[in-house]
Image (cartoon, rainbow, N blue to C red; front, top):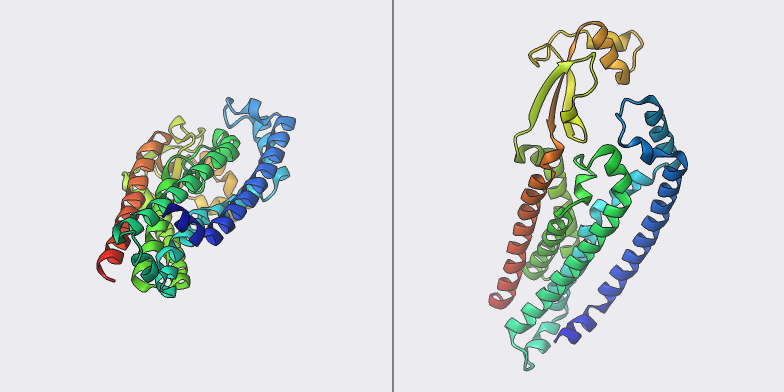
Length: 315
């Protein structure tokens, strides 16, 4: 049964393997080049120093200029779990029902339950292996950026820890459920991809910052960022009064006077202003990872069970 399932879906497995190989080669080339440039400039020696050190800031800016758009291209990999899981899960039941080959399988000595369990097990194992491989590659690739910028911001958080496993299970479950109910492979892949993308936008843009109540901090604009903001996810930061309330503060006057937004703090410092920041500290990385992994993984597992139950009892 395992051999038959692998052979039945070999086209999807081969295509996914080839795509993963190209992605791995591209990441290896970009990562090696970025590491070489980082070593040549001596950026790593600056990491333990305060981020206000002018020489270190200049070196970091030059390193990021040399590697160009490479860090931003990684954002495309946010869709990797959806592409892989949808491509596996969509045709698993959708194509089988669409072609009617399930009737042949169910007339053999293999029971329906074993047929469903085997398919779901192989699909789940393939998705988890692919997600684990992506985690390993991205931890290596993003290591230098994590040392400089932390891992709490959107884009860094999504590629670290265990959340990729949850994303993969959710995308797989969505594709399997749609394929089992709709019984069409291509629509299942499309709906799963769009659903995954929408769920990720909702969580990244709105829900994640509300999973654990963020902290807030008000400090005078003439001082450097407090240690609590080091590698934190700063949700919002702006001028305020001493109590953290925004009001008629001459921030706009600084901009109109020819200052840049980057120099706004210096301008506020000259006028005796304060800065109010709302943030998730770096220490909350693993609690947020655990909540989001459980949320996506649990929902994905429920969808996988729904796909199996529907296939067994609705045919």
